[in-house]
Length: 111
Length: 115
Image (cartoon, rainbow over all chains, first blue to last red; front, side, top):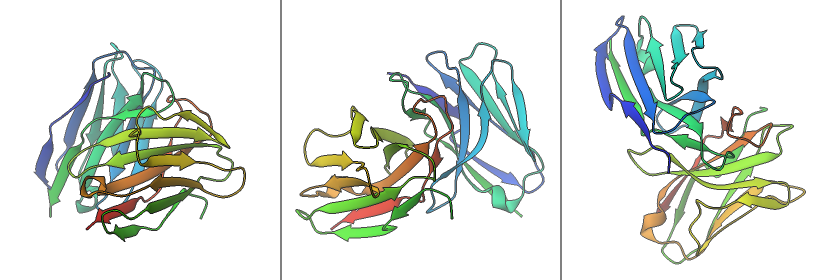
């Protein structure tokens, strides 16, 4: 099946720093989705990417759909404590119906 | 609240009991997905349903687990004779279209603990 590899597994940074994380796939995707999950909550969609090379921003978040269609990047600028959480990348499964998720990048931000 | 609604938020069951998890999709969405999340893991697809139809249950264990999405009412994920290994967070998602290229919106999940 498809493999989604996220890195880094965890990050521990200071408030104000920029953050970068990425996701690679064993197969080509037509869509990349980035979600954030707060403790005890469900994943919340941050950014959706639909085109190779696409660069999309949502406030301090910027995500890019890699040219090879096998990777994607998420950047967070000027991090704040409420950015704490787990960030997941996701893409369509082989069946075409559901999503495959990476294992997540856990972000901790100290004031 | 027009989001995906799941209940209960927390559920405790003794081994051998049944667990029933409910999910009401976003208004206008007729595609429902169930995912399971173990601690320190990403979400794993279980089943995809449309109204009154199971479309893909390839991620669901063959025994003890079943799902339905009736014409009226919420989608139900049912786990019979629960075991400790069923303890996990179960998330429901809904989408406007039935393909993985469409944004899916998740509920807050039901955290099942089997004691």
